[in-house]
Length: 179
Image (tube, rainbow, N blue to C red; front, top):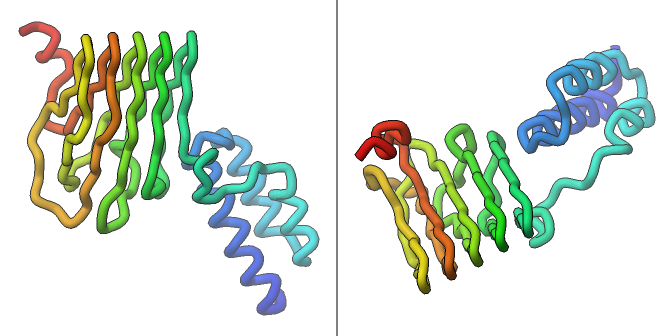
């Protein structure tokens, strides 16, 4: 029988592994392997060794920023979305899929900056969008049905010679391209 300290540490490590997997920092095989190690661990030290090589998770500005300069970034997040997220596309693109992500009640702000690039954000059902973005020789839009919800996604920022587009679930991307 494990001690209460080991049990609590095991739960913390398992939750941490799931968050890293949700943030695409572990493959499914790595997750399964580390979970097996966590369930077999007999001490707090054994448990800490399972996650010692993983980057720290937190709500710092650096952790909540996705940047693409002369390149592209495609991300699919399925964990909890930070309350503030920044996207930068400079002569590049950022595609962010949040359809499987969890939004906390209240306001989540996504600050978008696109210079000669594009940003595309896919949101899940059950969120309300406030668009405070603007464009200069570009395009900044929200497409789809805006629901009434206590979970608000506020889009801010600017598209200069580029575009930023937020897509809600009822938008069919294939149909949209045929219009």
